[in-house]
Length: 167
Image: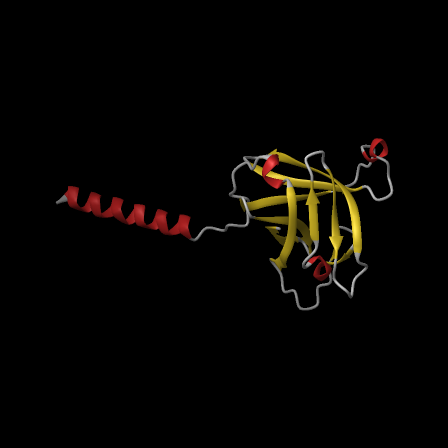
């Protein structure tokens, strides 16, 4: 009789643990390390979003450049040498290419996609640019990746999310 109660209690604990794991917050990067070579190529941003707050009146200027909405359908060229670009194509935005120096970094078992703007600089000058941007890669496969940028807003962390699709 006592053994039956112990087994029932153990079953309840396992069930609660499984439900708790299944319902846990997924904001933290759960992706594994993505090799840098997986990012090489040409990508298009298919969607942008803001998670973690009401976005009705929130205006985001992404990467100190243009409105977040302007990044829809932007094209990102990421060659092996790290000197790439992104091009804003939206008609209502300051369109055109922006030169970047990109890299990846493995952080806490995940991958960050990093870049800094190097418009108008020669390659030997671009390494001196210290300010840049870092996006946490939260999912990826050979044709897609999703990256998010954590931002402090009104005392909490919100996420600007970018969905990339290989062209």
